[in-house]
Length: 195
View 1 (spheres, one colour):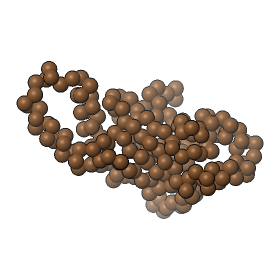
View 2 (spheres, one colour):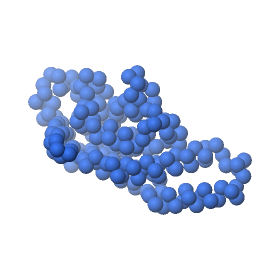
View 3 (tube, one colour):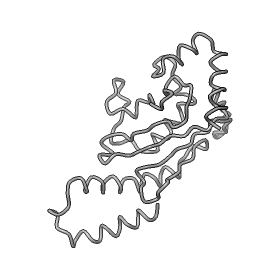
């Protein structure tokens, strides 16, 4: 992370030697994104839920990172929260922050095959803050940050687990039909794909 931050500071010093005509509009957008990401990644790393880990395969590319969510028994201040169905699994998410960030949300895909009402088996995710436009008004806004995205993804395994508005309709219907069999299938997926 420091490498990119140093590069951005160095690039700011070189701006005087370039003419504004030689810098393309898309380069400026990437530069704005990268400046935002330097600040947001530092904030994110300081405020990660204890069930999450962030990994940057290339520290010079803060716009591409992986998130691991490991739901488990979790102590938050004084409260004990049981993470429920997905306890014991490790779920990998790939995040790509587009050039137009923060006007558009990051693109996130679940890399771990999972039986979940809000995540398809192919990795698509139903989380309102990842939508550019949301009917309920809780979609993406330029005031949102990567920290919001990570906390939102983490919450898909606890309080945002939503059987009433599913993306994976089959999983939600399975839960309504037979909660115990649903739990068994979740456990089977965790043993097979999320260890």
